[in-house]
Picture 1 (tube, helix red, strand yellow):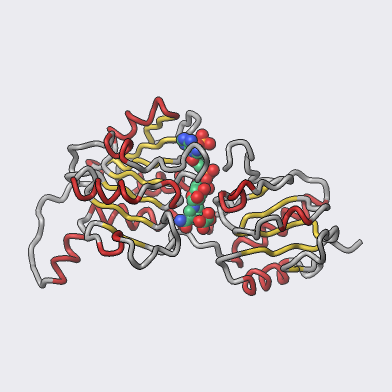
Picture 2 (cartoon, rainbow, N blue to C red; picture 1 turned 60 degrees about the horizontal axis):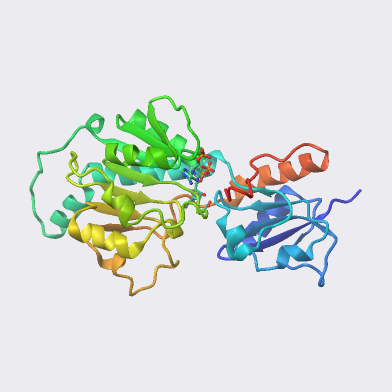
Length: 317
Ligand code: NDP
Ligand code: OXD
């Protein structure tokens, strides 16, 4: 029996490379980029990133939606909740990339990257002899999930003290864990560097704002707390970030994600000396790594096996 079709609906990624990877991994399935007509019963899986509004409603026999990223806020945006299970990316390749980004940014702030780059630009040879040891610096991860736990493990191997915050209580070796609203204050008071790897949900939207910055640790080996956000731009209030940088509540920030992407040319974050910007590049989705396991899941599901890495539609992640 021939297998059902796959709808590929990706905005902001090159569909041609995803199509090629899908066709290579699933030569027995047809990949289409548009449903055939107002209702298309021949499609049974959708592979999406920021799919066009309403497109999934035109697929009466859809069995599951696969996000090409770990985050799924792009699928639920605009109240467009699919009525079938949503599978997100949980993959060593993506996780490893994110941990590289986190380690890079943490080490850059810890080892005074911004200072030495500015000295180099002015040809200044000056060693700042106050260099704390990693064991004197606490890195806190907001969001102790797939990505946060791996980043914590790798930073711990570098010698940093680790803290983590999640919705439900967790035990992670070598990490001081905090949970829920009740645990947030104590978590923030313990951290010199805060890394945000939260999903964007109704509960987390706008969390990186003045009320949180007001609760961050004031005294610490880095002088002022550092914020690194690679979760989602909707988690942060950029006006509040700029104000906190200017009055010293934040010492520096690294941002990979923004309220508006691409970051508009007139956004003051671009030119701020205490801001490091990357263009939503912390952990890119690589089709060659992510598509084969997606197809394996589709095949297994067709044989009656349960789907893995499912999103909880109530929680939104
Ligand atoms: P997971 O679902 O594995 O982990 C999410 C973590 O956040 C969990 O620990 C969860 O708590 C916690 N969390 C969720 N809501 C709350 C809340 N209200 N209060 C406290 N903690 C909360 O996700 P991943 O680690 O795989 O990915 C995290 C995010 O990273 C993605 O959603 C995406 O937005 C972003 N991302 C960004 C990329 C980039 O290139 N910039 C690339 C990939 C992902 P609990 O454990 O209790 O459920
Ligand atoms: C993701 C992303 O969620 O790339 O995977 O942002």
